Amino acid sequence: MSTRRAPRLSAGVVVVRRDGDDWLYLLLRAFRSWDFPKGMVEPGEEPHAAARREVREESTIDDLEFTWGDVFHDTGPYTRNKIARYYLAQTHTARVTLPVNADLGAPEHHEWRWVDFEAALSLVSPRVAPVVEWARGVLLGTVPRA
Image 1 (cartoon, rainbow, N blue to C red):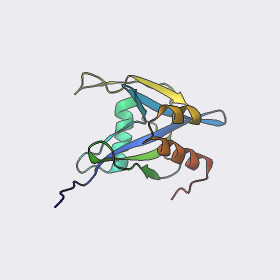
Image 2: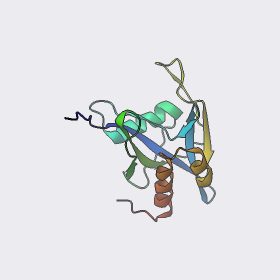
Image 3: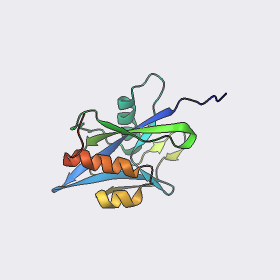
Image 4: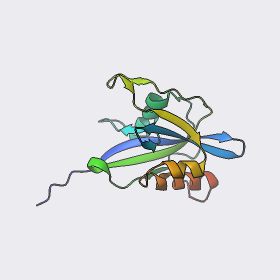
């Protein structure tokens, strides 16, 4: 008999900002991996609230506008049966700060970049690439909001 654990949920945000007529995506690098700001949903915490908290903790961005509503995209299960849920939000903040995580004594990430769609796809892992494509579809209006 298999005792398969229920997936653990992490939540994050595909943070975008306007650059003229284009959208730029915020990517954060931890070691060699590029991803959007995200982290584990704490007990009793709603995923949307966790996603906002993680963006603030990892980038200091606190002016998120969920222009497209509470739409989200879940990844398939990955490391230790985690699923990542990504929301989409806009910011007007261009300057990102990578604050020190008190538990680590250092920032969680090594670098940040605002990149266009093609650069985002080339930097992220195959697990995150469908999230980039989903976000672009929502931004272009080719993916329904609800």
